[in-house]
Amino acid sequence: MSIISNEARCTSCHAGYGWKDATFDFTDMTKIDCLVCHDTTGTYKKIPTAAGMPDPKWIW
Amino acid sequence: MRSRSRPWLSYYYPLVGLSGGWSAPPESPGSGGMPRRPQPPPAAPAHMDGPGPGGRLERALETVPFVDAVMDECKLCRQQRLRDMGLGTKDQTTAISCSTARSSKRWRTFTARCASCTPSTPPRSRTAPCATTIAPLDEAPRKPPAARPATRSLQKGPSGTPGPEGRLPPAVHGLPSGDEPGPGGLHRLPRQERSRPQGQDPAGRQPDPLQVTQECLRCHKAAGEDMLKSAHWLWKGPSPYTLNHRKEVKSARRPLPPTTSE
Image (cartoon, rainbow over all chains, first blue to last red; front, side):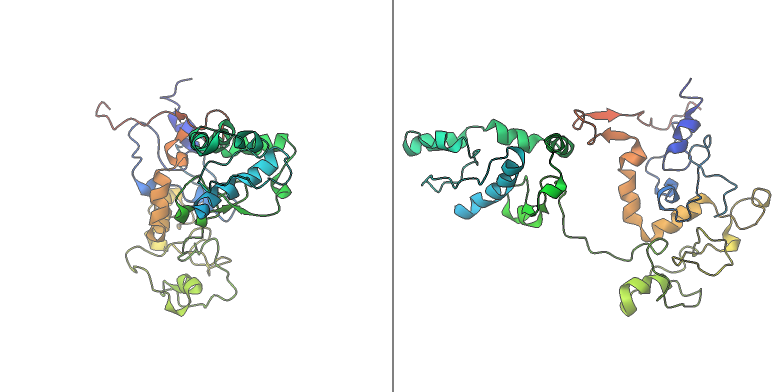
């Protein structure tokens, strides 16, 4: 299993948005995923292959 | 002199009481009054019959293995050690002052139970707690939607100063826009600020995740800066809750600087 080609799956658990390869900017605060901890609805979820992005079908 | 040695005593005695089962730590009969490292009470009598003041000075400077071991012990190791002895947090009924810092200013601010050893620092002055999670909705003075500081004045009272208004749109999460603010006084992201194509967003009201973060950062910038330094964000750093690895820095995959090869 390659890290490079599967990185978006690994980083789908990262508390941020878009860590899909080595170009991810770790100094960019706007990429922080606040809701993964602070969601109050209990329905927020990230999808397993999207480098941390939430489920697009999730209603905000 | 006497008062300087007191932090050490107060730090040490409960540990002794917890770890060894020694009863009633005896007052050291030494007449020196010199600040010296606290000795284990059982060992104290054996040490006290030294050859006069000169010997005491040497003893004061020598390293006491037990104390060093306790000072170097990590929180988890201590908890586990005490747990193995059948001692828990509830076995200690009085809170004591506890610090590893010698400056008197510091140790006063720390009050802790040694069994858990969680320094209870005075709470930092809280500015407005996050309205999306904390704000009660009953007494919330309902204001027109345009009045941005509605939730803010809830915590800070009438003197609550409005934030920088108009810089970013008011945001929602957890509620579709167009609804009334629900339980928790949720923020509101305007419908027209959506950034996704209509096809992906059948409801036509889906904000971008980054918009939500931006709205959070409008008030919680410091939290964002803290997050950038945290292990949750960097996926690397020491592992303080892993036995025998608390001081080692275990790097996960260190993010490489952006390359131009792609």
